[in-house]
Image (cartoon, rainbow, N blue to C red; front, side, top):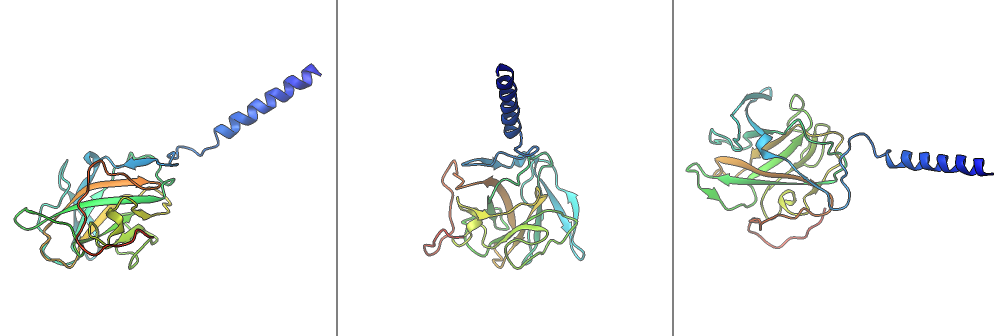
Length: 212
């Protein structure tokens, strides 16, 4: 009987070890209030060429806004994300913040119609994707980044179902011709709400609801 009890105890111990290690190879523990903020010092902004869409040249280290002023609607500003990020597929929401400047370098108070943002899985794939939301090469596509109706820059962010780590964030100047420069100031993956460490300026407009 003692031998049987010892064997049972050993089997139980092995079972518990197996359960504890079955969390899935290298996945981020994105439970509860977990948050992963992208290290902006490792983000690289690229010039781009269009027709067809492709990356140009990197604009140098620690550069987080376009150098050449934007001159037309829907002009692209491409931010390449770090290659050494952990597995982000356990996160269900993302918050992105941008700053905007006019041609003289003066910061503009955020509002709607400044920019649209897409998070791309592959910069060699389709940059344009769906009209809005997720697509085969886009974790999301959102309008009015920073504006009162843009969910992507709020604490709740937008919902994502990441199939792999994204490679880049594509910002596109929208209809407001005052915007000459777009600066990336934050990308945060989270579950639940992301809490800003300091108050964030929100675009002016009517009160809205925080809904998906």
